[in-house]
Amino acid sequence: MDVKAPELFKEIEKRASFLVNEGYPQAIASTAWEAATLGHSAPALFREIETRASFLVKEGQPQTISNTAWAAATLGHSAPALFREIETRASFLVKEGKSRNIAKNTVWAYGKLQYDAPTLLAAVDSASEVLIKSGKTQHASSNVALAFAEIGHKPDEFFNCREKHADEFVKRANEQDITNVS
Image (cartoon, rainbow, N blue to C red; front, side, top):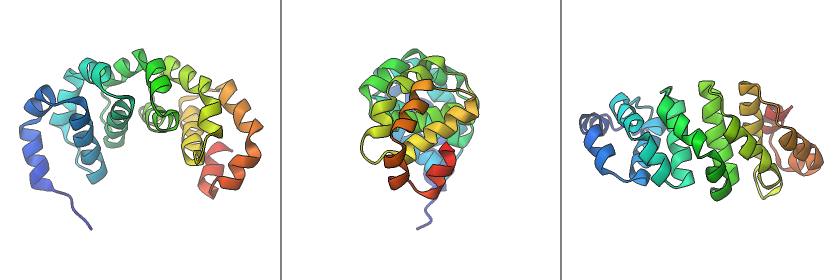
């Protein structure tokens, strides 16, 4: 199914200010995520997200914030205010969110946009045991390793943990995941 919804996004763009100023973080994040998923750049929407970055990060759930960061990076929106706010709440986001989703989406977004994120990276590094060992996280941990490499960050805990659980990782990972962490 190839649904791009151009008319819908024209209307969203026209009403971006209202949608972001009157909407709640989950709805805003869902709209941003859908724009990115469908390939709509939605510049007005992301300009408005920038103006409300503090509110969105303080009031949004960790996954909501992560999805918004992913959407901005996917579409190439630099969104500096959004990423600054995320960095200020990074420890909370990693602690309270699903570590693998926060790490996968948010660290990837920082890596894609080449932003420095010492607090986020330290928080993800500290959550390495959960990220690498829990469940089916090979894809998430390989994306985190790739994002760390793109940023030039060398997280000791993450790589030590990856070494400790290498046998489990390789058994469950696909070829691309293994390539990302090599």
